[in-house]
Image (cartoon, rainbow, N blue to C red; front, side, top):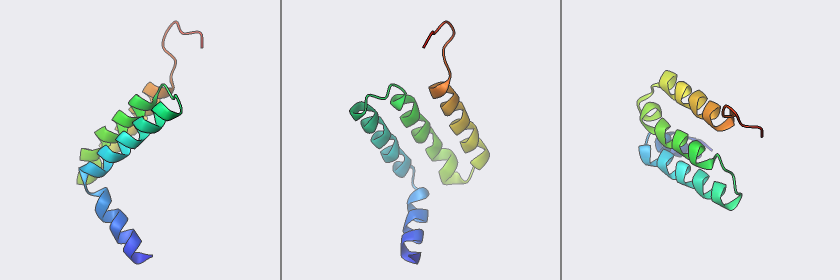
Length: 79
């Protein structure tokens, strides 16, 4: 269990991990026809620099902004 924890911690420090996760989210969005998948994928990709340097305040702001962009209605939208 400790080796897995160390491995996950080490991967979380690499920007390519977040790029890969973003691509996986985009791919799943295509499969499940989720319109907001590109936004979610971009949020994950944008998180990489903040998370790999330990800037968690910026990371939280990016997550909140991305979620708001994906979940809020546009003005004039009736859906």
